Image (cartoon, rainbow, N blue to C red; front, side, top):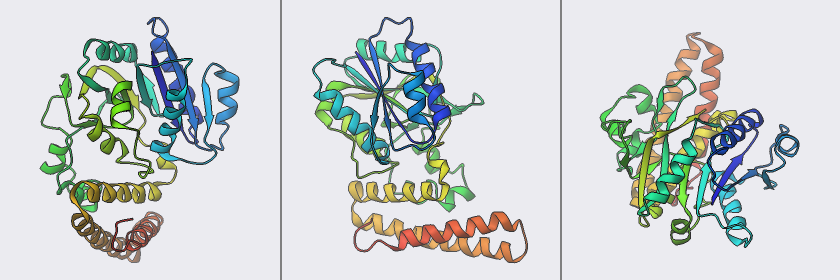
Length: 318
């Protein structure tokens, strides 16, 4: 009934805990489930862990890093092509998560009793127990200038991003949203068959946004706070922090072009070039003044890498 897909890259310890909590959550539920791990060419002993400790878990070796969308699509195609096991629901689960209690049975029961719902997601928590923002409205053009840019670093509590992140709504009430952060998404199979797979053109970030825009035409997207999951946010991508930021902006610009056209995407790109040039000047000045030079050296290098990446695009945005 339930297929659980985990796309993993070099997070062996976290993946171990993730699978263990999935199994514990479903142990006495009576739900028929299968765990599928897509390994994106990990080099940290992930495959040894899976073969020795979790022989019942199906492993797909991608051979290279396909990203979140590509890895999930690989598993979805294989699952949907098989005749021996027909999942009604699919859970896309990050490897840096820990399921709390009966969160997964709750989500399954919700989909079973609400046929108009296409996607249900839990309340996410940080490891310290605080609530992690996971609800979103579709981004307006202004969001592209604020989210994860130097402007947000300077004014993180600005009203535009707060509205985008649904900070005006209570986080302890069940509610319909535009989309949910993709750390844990349980999706009705029939909705996937209607909406299609994820867009693998997004290597990382924005893929769940674009996908849920299509899934939303097949049913409601529901935030279910009674189901809770811990999310060690971004542990795979944090292994290469500068690349993470490059991929984030690359994906956001691609989405901006798809939703609002190339003119907005190019305007955002020019803004980012100006913003990171200003950051480069600020960090270089602090380095010259001798202020925490190790930190400034890393930040200057990051700014150069971002500016090189942003400068590569021509008429099309990446």
